[in-house]
Image 1 (cartoon, one colour):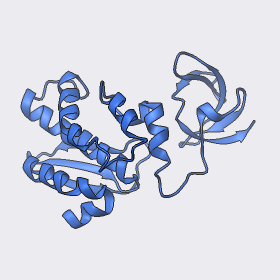
Image 2 (cartoon, one colour):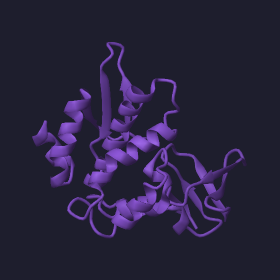
Image 3 (spheres, helix red, strand yellow):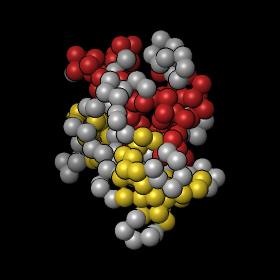
Length: 200
């Protein structure tokens, strides 16, 4: 297991992550990429715990995702199954578990202030923290040919992962209003949503 983890995690995170997995008695599955999520946690029918994490994530996002999912398991075990999946109990657990990893021996120095800020109040997904998500993206092995919504000119048409087309509109406080071309409905997009530019 440690050899497998070494392929996906920063070197100094391998041993503590292995201990967390062992102590939590969780079955870790590393799976092919799913567009809509980086990882998930579920309790199987036999009562055992299973975490899946996308194999395509860079090692820093893999680490954050793995700890995010282990935090679900530990929060449910400690506080009961009736807590909100990303409520206060999970946030506290995630912060506590992540704290030993937020140091320069594990993360590049340019990520540390962004991580410190993110973990003051962690979100359901690190992808909703646009600044952190964009900073993490530069460590991906394969650079994507896609664009971020915030980079595109207003009025351009873009395609999302499921093939739907949208026209970019104005920015609200944090997100962009975009009109679905086929229905005329308005949707809000995170600035760091990755899309394919069709025409500007």
